[in-house]
Length: 414
Image (cartoon, rainbow, N blue to C red; front, side, top):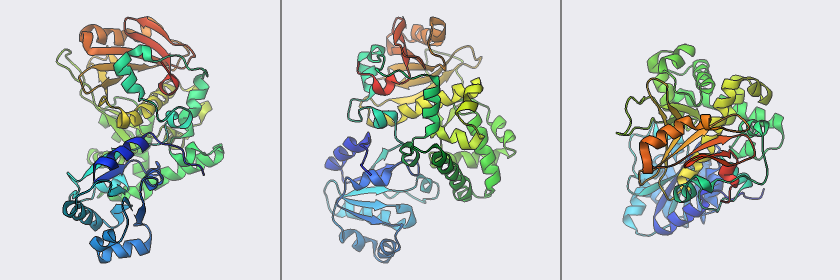
């Protein structure tokens, strides 16, 4: 199969040129190993018994016996290899020596992290639409928005509609499904992925090993993805107690199955909620978790809106890794529920961009009222606001407030 260039390829090359070790982290099956192999000369695959036995017998000798850059894959299967990497980096100076990959879950169980100060973490995610149909080598859309403002988003040449976006969201971003044309095989693969999370990975949570309860909790999260919901609502829906639910939260976030988007705060605004927004990292898991297909999502307006917002965030998340403006994602909501902004992008210089996601083919000024409210209070600190919709056109709604198709995030050339 021909390799599909990833957003992180250029950055990984740059990091290896200047640093000794890079730790690539991301959800299981997001393509970490496939990408890492293209940047190394040799590899130790610790899921192979021969390589694992060699490292267990003498990890330092195992590293010295291989060419660099060296891929250390599935490190969590033989965790003592990390101490050997640390010693190798400390004893011999040099750049581009190690790329380390493994399951994110091991952060839960590792007693310590030997690579602090020795390896740079590089987050990696599923295949974004920019990687699939856009230009993965282009400047990040978040950097373009930070520099040129919301006018950087223009209408794409190929128009998509609501059905297209729902289908894209349910298609899947993990390479095994993103590149699979057979819908039946995609559904089965995604269902199996959920089974792996709730059956195998659930055993990592002490005292909460019941896969049925973990599945119920994950289903409650899927039904409320992109929502600011009381924790009690989730664990009572799943019929588990608060401590069990907290353990599940830790597991699912460490596995990068669920992402917590923190609430944004500023001293210019008061009475803002501090509750995070929970989102599925892979929007397509809504399908097997809730037993829905595209037709069912299109019939349910609440789920439709949640899925589209989860999908938009899934396209922004990979941009965080490669953007030079140090963006971070938040949400905003006041305690009275009068004002809320789906996504607040805060750049490293303190400026912000507000994003609203609408499951409609156009947008009006009323759809931008929360963005206008935020702009009026932040003044020049606000780069602008975007109302992303499912129609074909991009147009201004107010000063620094613009409506644009969702697909302009990966196809806009403005």
